[in-house]
Length: 103
Image (cartoon, rainbow, N blue to C red):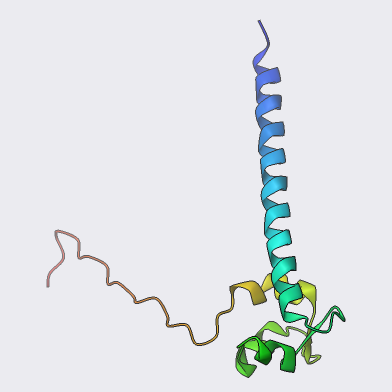
């Protein structure tokens, strides 16, 4: 019968491989989206390129973390892929009062 250490090692290896696969998929998605914004293929996104895809100037400056007026792939991957211009904020649902709370 195999030892429990062997099983733990196998589970750890499976977890590490699963995490690496997930990270690769996310990076590939960000890379594809970045390329769609980088219309001239210079490896950076200018404000004009960003606006041509419907992005706003304020969001562009939020993504441009170092303030050099271009968005690098790293900046885009960290902030750009989750930034949505003009999207309404999710409504805040108030917490339900606890049974003993006074109203």
